[in-house]
Amino acid sequence: MPDLWEDCVIIQLPGANGVEIVWTPAQAARLLSEQWPVENGVAYTKALNVCTDAMMGTFPRKQARDAFVAAVNEAKIKKLR
Image 1 (tube, one colour):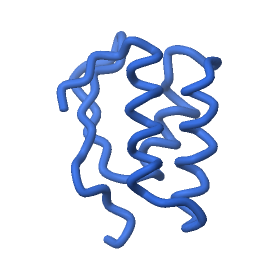
Image 2 (cartoon, helix red, strand yellow):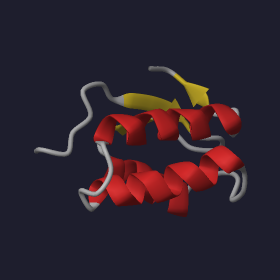
Image 3 (cartoon, rainbow, N blue to C red):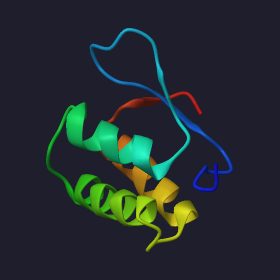
């Protein structure tokens, strides 16, 4: 699959059973739009936009991953990897 990140991001969302293993901008965008514990913040907004652009092929995947990790940190979500 060409849109895979080199390294996955593993997070544990509050109130979720188990962990989420995120390999693609599309997975990240889905989590941000459907399951994220906060719907505001600079990093959240940037990550949602950048991951959506990356899944459309108009933004670099690596930078989308970095933006997603920044949103994880901003929301104080437990990051396992």
